[in-house]
Length: 121
View 1 (tube, rainbow, N blue to C red):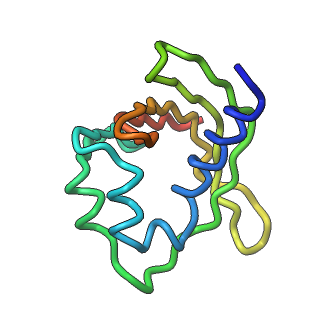
View 2 (view 1 turned 30 degrees about the vertical axis):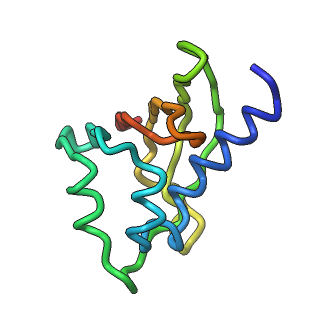
């Protein structure tokens, strides 16, 4: 895959980790496809409406770091992104290490996430 496209997907993924985006329903709505669903690391299933309804301004979001990105074009308009993430605690320890898989779909001139799965590491 083209390094510029890889950087674009890393930026999109990291935006979803940003407290500014996670606390803003409009930004989340723009990044998540209407048919979005997620299987969280807890094995619970979430849909776009679930994610948006849990957004509360002022809530503390952990610092999330990501590494070891891999990308695979499934078609011209579908990309699979996998990587590892973890919460960086205030004492600089790592917790909630997770293997993440995301499927991004290109629609209406924008990339939107349509699927996510997190598996504890």
